Amino acid sequence: MEQIAYVNGSFVPLSEAKVSILDRGFLFADGIYEVAAVLDGKLIDNASHLARLERSVGEIELALPETTARIEEIQKELVKRNNLANGMVYLEVTRGADTGRDFAFPKNVKPTLIMFTSTKDIINAPSAKTGINVITVPDLRWARRDIKSVALLAQVLAKQAAAVAGAGEAWMIEDGKVTEGGSSSCFILTQDDVIVTRQNGSEILPGCTRKAVVALAEERQLRVEERAFSIEEALAAKEVFVTSASLFVQAVVSIDGKKVADGKPGPMTNRLREIYVEFAKATAV
Ligand code: PLP
Image 1 (cartoon, rainbow, N blue to C red):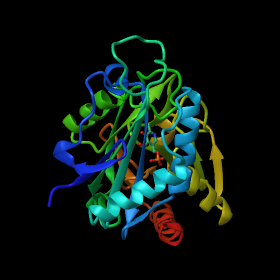
Image 2: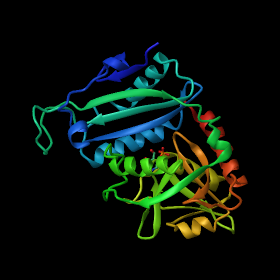
Image 3: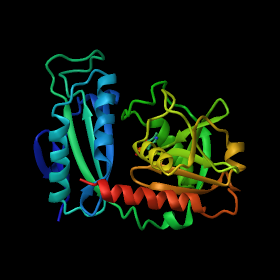
């Protein structure tokens, strides 16, 4: 059966899901997106994703065309219509289609809201057992990375470089420090058992999974430090991992071809992954 997508109020077959060539998402990347995981047909940490959506649209003065409560209803309806057990719901809101290509905000134009789903068995992904290799690239992005903008060209190039190198993620570097992964937040576990992840700010996206993992670790009296770290520090660490909605907690076993510790996912990474999965299942909606 063909996938169903959502476009501006209608559920339609994916092949018929279309927006105008004048849509500002297409012309200017003038839009915001979110990705929430689905486990057993339920949305994971969705309140956090919707809160970030509200913040992102607020930062670019874009009014959501629906309330977040209605957006969640649409997400759920789409999951149901696609019989989605495990995977992701992607949603995007743009400033809509004007009659031309003026840069300044158009007046009286309704924002575009689209959603589609994809299938992924996040829990049993093979990389959860093996870990992934990462490469490093310069961070070429704009100065407001805290906004989850659809302007992702720098990440497209970073992740293409990773794909060519046979790596699962690209870590972006600025001023000698790791900012974040192309689509993930970065963590290390130091030799004295401190979990380190870069502090939120305009340099990185405030990851929803990062936020949950930090809170879950702190609840368990694990030591967490939010600060920037270098690749040298990561290579000297006990463990390295990334987090995202579509990976949960995922071990990193090499960086630029150099092994992290013994080149296998470590016990803290495995433990945090289990803790996160437990949290995800217990709070799914
Ligand atoms: N950092 C960037 C640049 C991302 O694109 C993403 C997710 O797509 C993340 C971090 C992880 O965020 P989350 O845990 O909310 O998926």
